[in-house]
Image 1 (cartoon, rainbow, N blue to C red):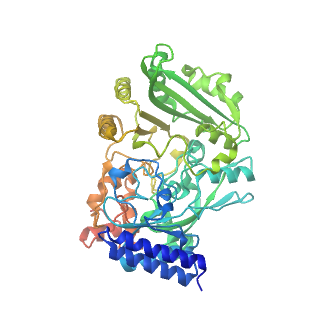
Image 2: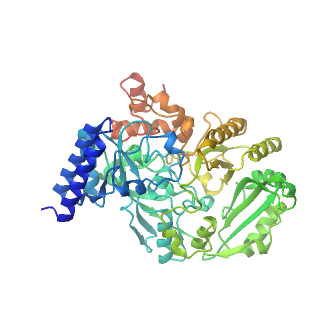
Image 3: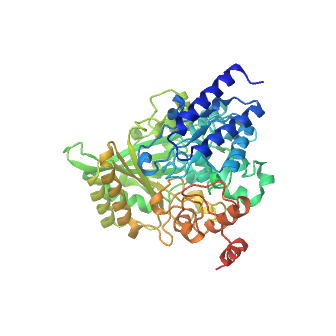
Length: 545
């Protein structure tokens, strides 16, 4: 029998259905979906206060975005949000979606650059918000962790640090990023030159497929397990958790952040950086940030180059390496800070003045949610000439809210083949570029978008070609999107798919066609299903066209 609390909530949802239905063009399907879901939850003896309609006060807080731009770029918001506590509740949501035809989108963190986990251009949809699936367990002896997809990177790092001083995991530096999207899209880190990316450390996973079946590595098969380790999990099902191997790091690591402006030979330093960043000791990762700033000396507008770096070892060992490989930077002992690996994460997240448990905070710092943002990415396989760098400076000086991030490759990344996982950006790359522009007012949107597209257009001559590669975790709808109806052809999807996955895109399409032939899990950049054609047969068999 339903509890008094559940019955009260059912009455509230029923009232909200009538309020919402008057203005919804698809209210009949929506109404039926909610009733189906309530019926399923009652059968499961589950609490229906995990179902949120747009009239519920909590609905808006669950949709707090890191990027206001989505409101105009993808204006459609979910008809319903479900925050399940149990696997059976996810299966019930899939069941109702099959019956009534509302799309499902899965949200683990909310840092999706284009908002594809919580917004849509026009298609009605329901969100499965995985925030309650966030347990992390560490097996110190086996050096593994089992992480549910609703956990954040910060929660994972905090839990590891409470278990061991020398175990770590190679993933991103932003602690509020959700594990689900980050791991399944690749997961670059400040120790990737030594320990590769997050997806390479996934050794098992649990997934619910379009039929509601629960699968692990063995039962899902080699192809599907391959696909969700870099090809994005939400094209193939709803991932519940990952089991990953942890890595061993020294008790003491060294960080530094050295900034030079154009007046301090930043151009020459960036040029030299391009020639050594992928070749230095693999224990050293020299990340580079570029942004407009006011010169400390003249107060005139200039460009700052910040060499923000991590060395897996002490300063005494780092300094000779820098003196040999990059003496032009002039790194000194005073520039170096020694600390533990987990403390370095606070340093790179700019929260090193706070206690360690700040890693458990799910709310992004730095004013996110009150600004507009657009990001893009590129890969560079040959140094950009000095003339090209100077043209980049001109772009940066035109836009106050702009920044670039150069993330070096090389090291152990060169030992992986491009086909080992769907993440193909391995050998041959010197660094990855992350482009970003932030603005505060809606009326500045056109200028911000025009600026970043202008720089991206200029950079075509300096980056990889055929395809011009992009990082899947930095989603960018400018490079292509699927049809709203879900009937996107292989050729159309290849426009964006080959950029993210290169030749691995073909195999991802074959896997998708096999495991989700009805294209149940889809969005504006999900892996498509092949139609009925000769090309389909060739692709499914892996033959050349």
